[in-house]
Image (cartoon, rainbow, N blue to C red; front, side):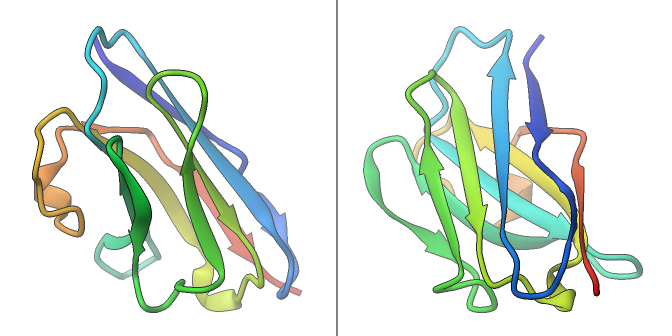
Length: 125
């Protein structure tokens, strides 16, 4: 059974930084796409960033472009999200997502089969 486990969330002041990590276990396949989504209270889940195993600079939501960086790790099926210049609007539960299918629409949550349990990020002074 494939499991994605996120870590690195927490409480940070506006302007601060956090680094989220996501590692997969139980998968014998390499994911083609790994990404991050978030959901704030009372709002729908939204795309944050995603990257393909084949490389590239990644895709980012406009709201995080220039502040967040997604990267894959040396370990198979791992992904990170470096979040800088955090704003109160970034407060949400952040979810790691993954797909083994090639060519998916990375911004569409319905395209991802595997999800983590989420990690809380709170930006507050």
